[in-house]
Length: 402
Image 1 (cartoon, rainbow, N blue to C red):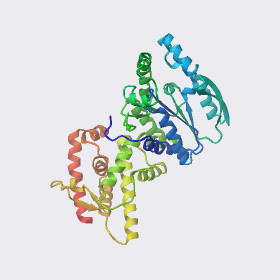
Image 2: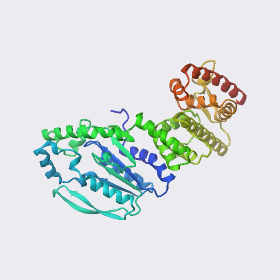
Image 3: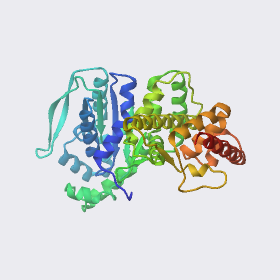
Image 4: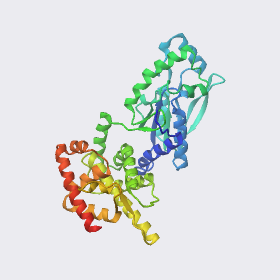
């Protein structure tokens, strides 16, 4: 369990930030997000809160619940399971009808007639789903990630064992033997969907960074399309790197010693606009992308600091931790003016762009020497030697500008 649990609301705000570039890159895009997980994992609250947050930000959103698409009403379906546990699984759900309603949404249909479960009456009623002007469709359920018609797949990792208390609150008869058997069967089926997910959420509603080969392949593809001028690919690239970019933004702001009223999320949005509007800049790989983002953030922070200083008529802003660059040894209390740092890095980049890139990757992005060596296809010793050279040059430049 994460020591610092998030809330469904904070998670929804983060997810909106990750999805927003999709609409900005292609206005009018109809996006379908699937949210899956085990019973009690928080699928419904995540979907409903995400839908509410998106609406609050001006994005018309509709949420669909898989529970409305079961073939049998709740009590009858439970009896069917008691007859044979072989009846437990995706075949209990009319996923074909759910897929048809997703297709209707994509086709721009104004409305569809859909089932609506009546729990007390143990039956299905009919509801009209108004899809007119809807831009985001959030589909939640235990098996929805198995469907092809999804743009973004989100998986909640909490298992039925993690969420016993939530199920108890919802009066889900967790102590009944048949329920335990059903949950165990569902777990084996549902857990496999994690491999299909674009975004993982842990039991504390925190995002889980992914390092799967599938993500690496998709990242390479996105880079190729973004380099070809595809703004949608650039938006997806930004969303895919959200975790690392947000950490990078927080690190950049934390290094600043002045009272900047600039948040990591705001900085991240500005960097996205910078990346989306770029021209004649190609990202060779993940390291190049992160280095570019680091330089963009650094420039934005410096510009912001200068504007604040101008408004306040004085008061220099400093960046902390720069003592790590001192070749004679780090000083934990060392700092340097942001303006001087920006000028020194620009000078270094003009004469030795590879060394400046190394500073961006190691000092600003936080990549280890081993990671940088893999990115650049060189030995770790070469990276360390270049780092010493970069430190010496940059520290000399800082002396000139300081």
